[in-house]
Image (tube, rainbow, N blue to C red):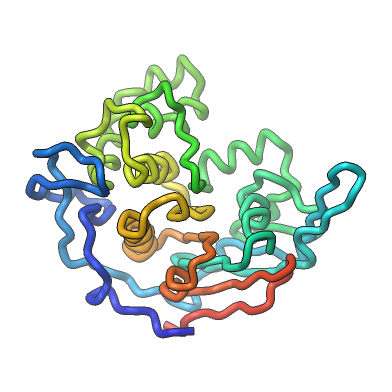
Length: 291
């Protein structure tokens, strides 16, 4: 595995860091293709990076996971005994050719589906066998999910799409009582990812990069401990994809957010802390930087 570039050599973007303290507003400019003239964007100051520590606590693990789908009377094995371990603050990429089982594995890690055999644990607690309702609650509070095709609700604005996890969590009445607090939190987060000027726009008024950053904000608004991303740059041009990837790296480094991302791009994989390679539903290699 190639040595991971230092933060000083990483390309800067207009996205700006996502941190726990308010960032200053930068000069007008165009963000990710689609920002209106005169829109304020965030600068990219020197990052305060906490390097990944190989002895970080175990966040996520899969143990001998199997998954087979049954279609038209045929059995199609997708995963055959996959095991992996991801530690706190680690940026992990899962790499493999189409059909290798990458997306299926990510869906199992995010409790969107259940394995036929094996176990998946979050913070050393088994989660794959939880009842349907408890898995929903877990995703709402502990796991952020980002998909290649955004899955934004077309009738909602950027701000409303970002607030959907809270709408689901509380229901109509309880959400109504908390709406102002959470709306303020969502506005701040959207500003930090370069969308402060797009709050009232709907998805069909956004560029691809802006839609993906909306999806990232939606995944992060509940402050999850684990972020799962399925080809988040696969539907974007190279420049915008690089900006989205840089934002995810910043989140991992600055906030010790644990990120697991599926990709087919070797250049992206080489910038991660750990690379897990799948072939025909099996792990063929797992390499990690010794930071």
